[in-house]
Structure formats: structure tokens, C-alpha cells
Image 1 (spheres, helix red, strand yellow):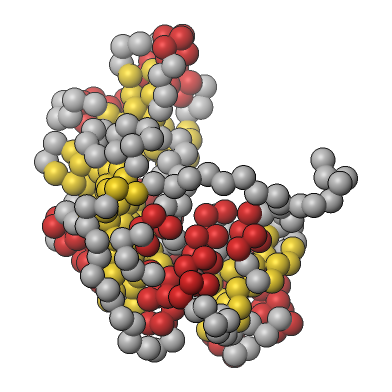
Image 2: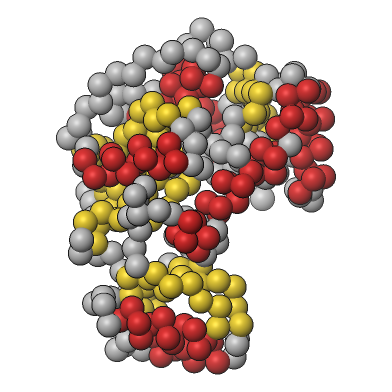
Length: 343
């Protein structure tokens, strides 16, 4: 079986390693493409190719179809333009290619915009933090006033963001010079943010939210069109370097199963939670493997193999998970290229 992973996050290498360990006799060939020849995912794949960096949208999907035909791809597991590829699933099927998408086009588009996602989310499915979406300075000021009357600390984040980019805790007291001198991270002075908004009367959607100050969980899931097959919870330590714990929080387990079922999620999915004053709250659904995917599999389940077996119509064996493990990752130096002329 030839499986193609196009350009995606560098952490996809952990998925490759799990697939190889799950199919040690070479039943799976991992084909990987990227726009950079030094992509670390190349180190864990069987075949590597460069893809054009200038293509996007429908032009990129057309290139993907041609690539599948030229390289005899059986399964396409998309990263870049996953929602658009899902929308054109039938074209891939006509070329004999099965598309491993985490959801349909509309759901993937919904998950990509946290403002739309939170507004769509039913409390019967999962609980999210208190939030208000804003696009103007006036709306921002009103949101801060409203939420500050109910919550001790507030934070902000762009509605469209990955890896926590743009997340900041609002600091109503200290200025940026204090943040700089004290080494304060992930905070922003409220007054200075408001001052910047005066020069930008309208901006892309920003979420003003209650700040959840408790521990965070990252849940890596293998699913089959709304059926949760296996989920490994990783509870993150608030102290750097103290690792993560394989956990089994019942509230998180319940929300995870309902979210998978409600949005008919498929393949490898990551769901993140954080604890607030009233218990765990949903942060986001990532329709892709997480950066800590390899640590999740230390719980005793090869999530990548489980997802692939289910995708192929097989009945995967789901082993019992080992709760209470303390896990972490160790950085390993590697050679990306052997050319003497690399600069």
C-alpha cells in the first residue's frame, strides 16, 4: 500500500515511525512531499519528492491528482489544502485513490475558524470557555468590560491560528517595558493593545476569552467517521521539563467521544482541553496528528495503524492503555543533507 503525505507539519515523522513499526514487513510504503528539501519528515519516509511552492487552491489539487497518478498512490493523507482535497474526493476516487480526510470540507472549514466553531458548538456535546468574537476596537472594549465582570483574567487569540500563535493573556496593570525586563511571556498590556487598535479600526476576527488557568490536556484520537476507536490523553505539566502524564479524565473522555461522533471525525485527530474555574473546557479540535503524537502512542496503542486499519475496512485490535505513565521526548541531532555546498 502506497500512502502519500503531502506538505504538512514537521511532526508528521512520528506518524511515519508508528506506521513502519505497525507494518514491519514493508506492507506500507510512505511517500512524502514538501516544498523544502530539508524537511525533517523526509528522514522517516520511504520516498521523497519536492512539490511546487507556488501552487495553491484548485491548481494545487490538480497537481495532487497528477502526482497520485504518476506515483501510483493508493491512499492520499492530505495536510496542505486538506479541506479542498476533501471537497474533491470523487476526483481522487475516480483515479483509484482513497482520501484519508479528518472530516468533510464544511467541517474542516468550520474547525479552522474558532469563532465559527465555538458558536456552532452545542453545550450538550462539549463545554468551551466564555468568549466574545470582535472585529473593532469598540467591540473589543465592550467584550473586555463584559467578560471582566465575570472572570478574573482574560486572554485573546486570533480566530484563525495554529500552534497557539497570537495567544496572549491580557495584563491590565503592567506595561511592555516591565514584560521585557521581567521576561514575561504570552502576555500583552491591555492599554497598549487598545492603543494599537486605535490605528487599526477594523481587524480580522479576534476572540476575547476567559483565561483558563489550570492544567492542559492534549488528546490524540483514532476515529472512523464518527466512531472513536482509541484516545490517549496527555496531561501537560505546568513546569517546563517535567514531561506529561498519560491520563484518563472522565469528563475529557466523554467530551472527546461526543465531539468525534457529532462532527463525524475520521483518521487521526487531536483535541485540546484546559481546566478553568468550573472544570475542563474545550480549546480546539485539530484535524491532524499533534506534535506530541509519538508520546501519546507510548500509552500502548499504535494510533496510526489503528486509524489505517479502520480506514481500510478492517477491525483494528484496541489494546488497553497504560495510564499514569510519565512521558517526554528527547531531541536527537540529525543530518538533513550531506552536500558540502549547503548554506
